[in-house]
Figure 1 (cartoon, rainbow, N blue to C red):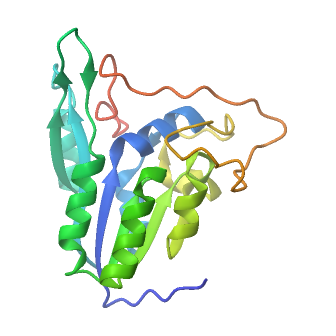
Figure 2 (cartoon, one colour; figure 1 turned 60 degrees about the vertical axis):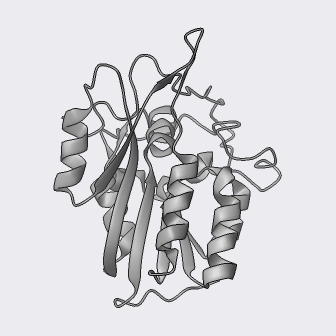
Length: 219
């Protein structure tokens, strides 16, 4: 379905930083140019809020990355790692990102979700049918939920022009990422699997080592 993007539309973009980071890393071994992601998604319209949801590690090495996002006009919402008894670590922004989108949805004409996570399908449907807002998604098609793509009014596939959205991209793709938080029936939804590549194992961040918020600005 073709959609109209008027310059006067009030737009808010909500960025699932970890989702984009891991997709870029596993598919292309590159880093995301978040400024370009926002620019392409907004498409010259009236940007009201741009928020990136990020994780602060124990070392706090990601501080420079947060500052780089702020200089691009992207707000950062930071969550610390939760350490449970027994040493397990967890950091997840899904609920917080959804709450913000719902809270701001009534003041926007268009909500843009920068994520391929199928867990956001109910959010897309709620925003569309409760508030009547236009909901668009920008993400890596090869690691995105088919249901998410179908539920949105528009889907921008970063994989169609990776050079435009990535830092350190040298060409090529490692292949389809199976089961990357994208719903169990992505293959049934027609996810693209190149016949001349092998499936790349997903490298989910477990709270240790390099975090999505570290060294993503291509310094």
